[in-house]
Image 1 (tube, protein in one colour):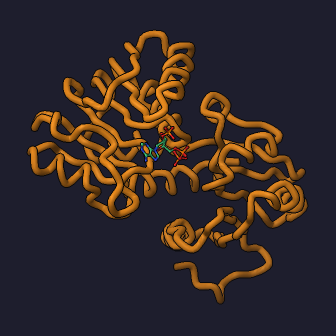
Image 2 (tube, rainbow, N blue to C red):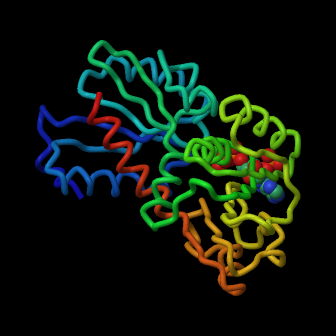
Length: 267
Ligand code: ATR
């Protein structure tokens, strides 16, 4: 952790905005990173309800020691329109999870969920380029991951979601940006793909259904999660049982923290 006694009038301030906020792991991770790099920065939690977000964000523009902030559930889509500009990735995904603040108080948004996920895969030696991938989910996180996998060069991408219309819509938006990727809306059957990704929130709560039909998994598949807790979700447990290589949810967060630090430092 950053030593809070070393905070001075020159310390750069960052925040994470969420509701609820009690579970967030980003402050400890980011403050550790600042310490390790010898940076004079601190990240603090801001608990903000959805109805207060516009007022809070308007106020943040005027805080001159604020370098930027991280935005998470449930604000990731609402914040888009509260930014002055957003990256192409944030525009296509329709969500922002990191905002930098210029000296003039302008806010620039980016989305790093997908880039963090792909960086986590690569750090583990899994290169998505050329793979066939099955993605369960079409919500905020799944959108970001789908675009990042397409950008990373997957050969084929199948998207399956409880609400099929959202999967279809996501497929169409990816097709518009990445015409070379073979895209389709899938069923609950993840077989015949090199990489199987859970991009839904299923697995977070005890008793959740599996995000896909794990009985169809085969030992040559890699099964990856975005859920961090539990570290071994029922999907990963089932995949291990079959003999698949599994990739847990935590690297996505750790890589995102690195990317966020880089985005904030580069402004
Ligand atoms: P996040 O920002 O964490 O991705 P989200 O945008 O609410 O959250 O997306 C949640 C994802 O989990 C969606 O794909 C959702 O499916 P729907 O689009 O059909 O809602 C999926 N999901 C959540 N609960 C589910 C359940 N009980 N069964 C199947 N899918 C579920």
